Amino acid sequence: MADPYTMLQIGQGVIGFMEARREHQRIEAAYTRNWQESAKARDESVAALNKRAVQEAEAAAGRGFELQLQALQEAETRAVISGESGLAGQTEELKADSVEARKLRAKDVISANLDMVLDQIEDEKMGVNTQMKNRINSMPRGQKPNVLAHAIGTAASAYAAEADITGKNLF
Image 1 (cartoon, rainbow, N blue to C red):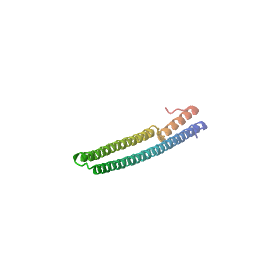
Image 2: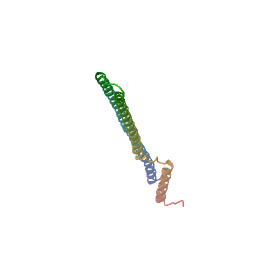
Image 3: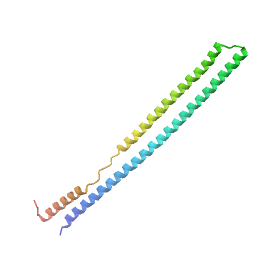
Image 4: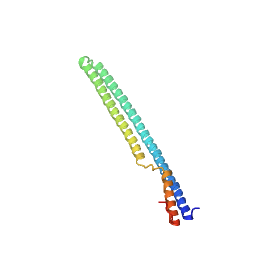
């Protein structure tokens, strides 16, 4: 029969393993919470960036529509003026072509600006995703306790306690 000191050593070894397992579960739960919060923050940021992309596209479409209206008004005004003045010919055609050319150049600029803004938004989305991964990876996961290592440690402590009490040593 083992003495109480040896039994205490065995009990402490079992409790040590249980505490290590509980600590691992706590760290793993914190890691999971961090992962979920990181994903949620990323999703919210991406949603905001998507909203901004839609707003930019709508604004560009609005500018394009206003541009078409202005070009149409200017072309019609020129047509009325040339009709009332009796002027016609190559000069008036060049003026009408100039209005159309300005409209097309402005549309190209609007389109190019929109493409650049949308590309920037996509880059920001990738950055948000990288931030999420960094946030997740910055949190330690902990190490699951090893039953065998705890059992060997407990057995060694129990043996040492038994040897101290009885004075018998196997080695």
